[in-house]
Image (cartoon, rainbow, N blue to C red; front, top):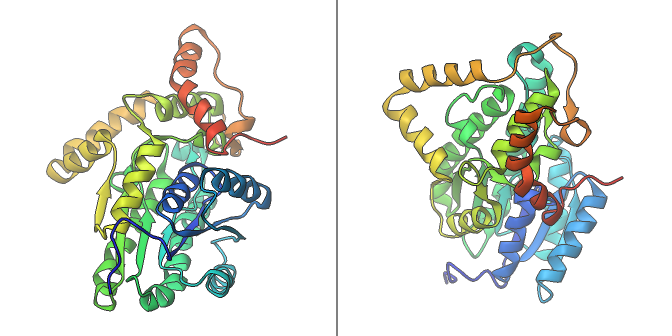
Amino acid sequence: MPHSTESLTGATALVTGGSRGLGLLMADRLAARGATVVVAARDADELAAAQQKLRHRNPDVDIHTAVCDVRDQESVHHMFKAAHDSCGGPDLVIANAGIIQVAPVEAIGAAEFRDAMDTLFMGAVHTSLEALPYLRESEWGGRLGLISSVGGLLGVPHLLPYASAKAATGILAEGLNAEAGSTGVSVTAVYPGLMRTGSHLHAQFGGDRGSEYGWFSAAAGAPVVSMNAQRAAERIVKAVVRRRTRLVLTPLARAADLAHGVAPTATTRLNGVLARLLPGAPGGRRGMRRGADVEPPHGAVSGRFQAWGSAMNETAADAYNARRRT
């Protein structure tokens, strides 16, 4: 018999990339609906901190962790088997693990594209393929959510590896939904815009690293441009639970989606204008560096703008387990 579309009491949910940021918030929203939650990530220390946060907020719900590298299908296979053996299910899975690389194309090479595809796209592929057998057996009717991005809707300058992998992930979600529907499994493609999660601290920056860090952290934290991550997590979980086929978050992402569909040539030209406004790549390829290790830009204008735009993102970093540990 079908269960309530809102309550997940008795179900098991698994979230990859669940130790911090959006993944942690989605795990919290699933636990709030009564689901037993498994959060998966590569870092055992981050997972322990995430588990503590989730248990504090949801004391009556079982919270489990799994150390897993989604780039390795065997690791993903063992994760699902262990989750099934200990918790049952899973009945709902959200593939969220990822990386962000911010740099002009002249500052990167094929390796950065491979890294993005391995983590973002192949990670989603491995998670989906290993999840589907369990989801097909779910008495709830399995639900799978794949997190793409506004970058998967159009080629965002200085985010090309990320955008390419996210575009592939969106197509994967839509194709899986078409094929899995006859087995009772729904697949939701999610396209978030910028969110205040503290992601700037874990993103990789190349080229003029300080300037790239400056514009990205400012945009990711600006109230008009970015979205409150808690609200985003609630809407994503609701969409997956309700079996929505597609969800595009933030007004800017919806506008970009519409513009690219109605006027793709004009949108591409506008992207070209944006690209010319972004930092160059002095010295060519210099290697990528994590945001937490990048010195923010200095100067009267850029420094103040970055500080204003990233203030809310810095607060999110503390709240959502993204702050760098020493």
